[in-house]
Length: 143
Figure (cartoon, rainbow, N blue to C red):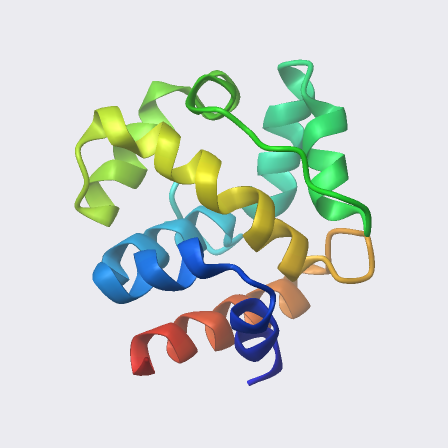
């Protein structure tokens, strides 16, 4: 369960606490990062998220989450600007949270989660990413 163990072992208490309080949140965020058909925001997955941030002039921010260096924080406004209201609405509905809280929740979780999913400093191939996301979700659901 390497990725889950790594995630929990890196002082990512916010991710673990959120998942344990509401597994729907983890399921929704992993759906956002997934490239499978029917995922939140469409099949773009993590690569689509990178493009969305780059398209809004925040490429340096998301690139730092992927790289092996420090992760600058994001704000709810950053996430809202990058993802748009439709994707945030989909996330909020799947996560079971009010839409007004979706951007802030993602802003608090995405930097650490993306950092853990990209240990080599690059976005993994789709199959590798899906495998990591599946392991992460099943690990959180068992917690």
